[in-house]
Image (cartoon, rainbow, N blue to C red):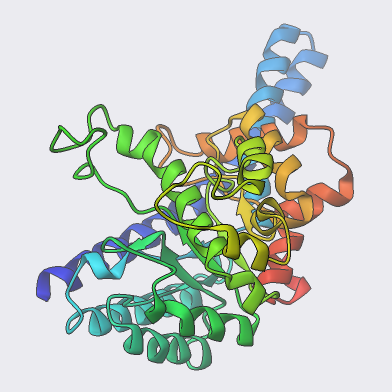
Length: 355
């Protein structure tokens, strides 16, 4: 139990460090703009070549792009999956510790963290509902953070139905992040995943699988207004639109042991249309083709800005690359506004002044 609480504290410390790093970023923007001004004046005076001006302008633009996310989107704080830190008897206390710490962090750094998403002890379904209520009503959480499976249990298991019902009733979003580790092998003859395949390829699959389990469980028929935000632009789903579309229109055609015909006939929409009801974020590590694919699948009104910061190989890289990609896609000003901050304001029910 003490080890689990220390793990939560380590994550909260990391978020505090991130707030300090963002403050340093703003200082870097100011310094680079001043350097650009000085070098431009020196060029006009004939003391430096024009290439020096170009370099200074590029540096200022590079930092200014990173600053755009700080000023417009900012961050929603959350911590890692609680059920990995303790059993059903320990996880409720761990979740309370985590959420108390997140609430304190947001209150102390309102210019850095726009809100927080509550962590839940999902291996204890009853305690999850209690903590959800406490975090939202008492601590001001603007949503909840869950993972694509709960210690191997899929999200369409009956014990999780009340969680989705309560989120829909409150009209607050569920943030859905993949959970898959190296212990899950790539092939049945092996004991573990090789070459970090569990992360690079496993996480996008894991996200798509969780989305499918929720779709075919009828969660959107029961709760049409339910808002689930999938990290990393919906995993593999947008790229596999054809399979998700025409392929799952024939649900059951490839299965002999289970009769899916009644399920398919009971669905009010095509399967692919349910998948489009999810929201998604832009944390795609600067991949232009993947970002465009996700935007075309979900639509700009369903996509929120994210960069996967602070897991960049170098500080600010993912943020700058994500902004660069969005700016390169010839989106309308209205769509960019939706992605950068408008959709977050709507889903998290934030005051417009935070933008």
